[in-house]
Length: 173
Image (tube, rainbow, N blue to C red):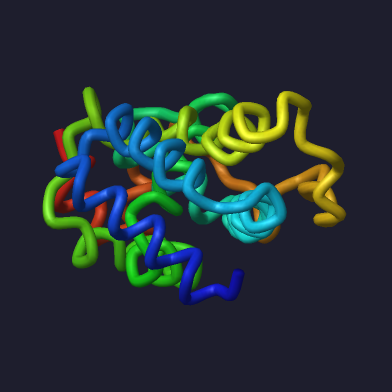
């Protein structure tokens, strides 16, 4: 599976789910079940590589603005959700997290930002296809620390300066 096919699967299942992350995960599993097990593993490799790439301090700060704070687990789920938003939103957000202010049409912190189940979709599909757990994907593990320079996510003034577009649309009280 190439990168284009990966994103086509993500996009088609998100569109069919009409933006609901839980429905998106269910539809993604159903879509992956139509592939052979090796293609499901390829999908999982693409997903994992992008999830690891999104492990940056700046993106974590953007998640904190959007979610009103972001624990380790919340940021893990946010990265899954971000991948689920498609190539343009994902790449834009990783490159410059403040551009999410322009790339996201809307953001409801009660629904959006939590894509944990998307992160398990390939594992579930592989297990259902083969009856066994997915093998090691051979993707280098996530770094011990996020890329970039750490900063205080609890400092509203710093968040407003670092992410002016996001802060104006989604973070300002």
